[in-house]
Image (cartoon, rainbow, N blue to C red; front, side, top):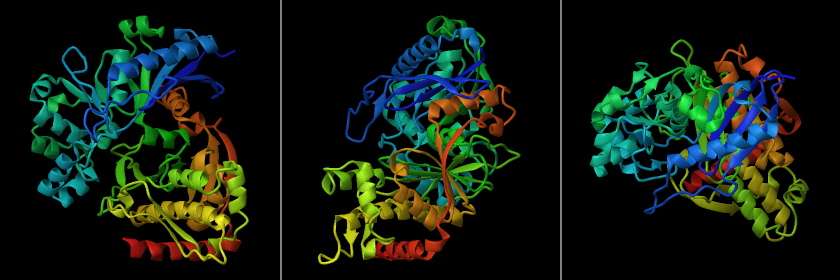
Length: 496
């Protein structure tokens, strides 16, 4: 029996999950998350969202203790540690590596005016050409808010970091970060391959507060004696991988190469594609970050499309149109209607402003309903088609940036449980869809195996990844899918 294990943490805003993976078989042997009910998010004012970093550390330790007990694994059996984390958060620590204030997390919007002002003052060409994004509401803008509104705290800052950097620091006593992490905070200059000094100068940040940079896959630091005593891990165990949750989700699905896509479709939908050259969307409708395998020699960018109105629309339809049946029966009902829903079209953007629409809020609308012809099956199918079309609309932006999309990897969960959703996505995009059984903490553990040299590359690390299903595009009905999509785009154009 193997005594080589890999540990992965996934630090989310609702919980911290930990998984142990047998390094030799690649299989997950134990997993746990804390808290079991959703972790609190502090909102002192409207639009604010903060969490205490100590809570992440406490929940990481609880999750680790449970999986070590469940798998009967000792500290010395764990050979490497990987960390996935909620993106764009800001953690500020003093010289004693103590957090100076709660973390301002990803969904906090107080820094929007700071990012927008920087974009106006510095100009679109400078920001998009170097950062590949607008400074927006990312980590750098959050730090600018602290500098202006909490100068006493700002003066005490020794290092700033992202949530995953904080957990790595608690494990090791060392503050460091990655190029991928800096890019998600708008602190990396892709044109010059260095910290974005034009933005740090603009905001008046001393560059010494940026943590040291380590490669995404490498011995980044080692578990300290103090952390070993707290956790049951062995002192000296290497931390060998970290990434934000979306790049890590792509890694978990073995998405590393240009043209490959990782997708999730829960309450909101995410399409994350790998680009092999430095590029950006001139309208900033998608975000572009350094992917996990990006280096100065090999450009690998993660282009992130987020659509708010996806699974939440499907849940709304279920709740209000087919409340007496389960989701599987609802999908069966939708499948009784032909492709294109006999002229019914749904624009799915009913969950706030959409970045893909240049931050417009146009609402959800049902179009083309004929009371003498259509029934609820048409509405259910049209809603799912509308969600797919919103994905494809965003993927067209990626294609305009130079991405050749030919394969979509996804976990078999949420909207990807619907055969109609899957078939429509393959039919319109022309891409093959591969469904897998994986999650973020397992991916982080395998990332640790790559970083530690236990696996020679991603293909060896993910050789054991369970491929559950492959959906090929239905070429026989491609024209019908594309006609329905064209009608959807025409109606969208009239709405925006």
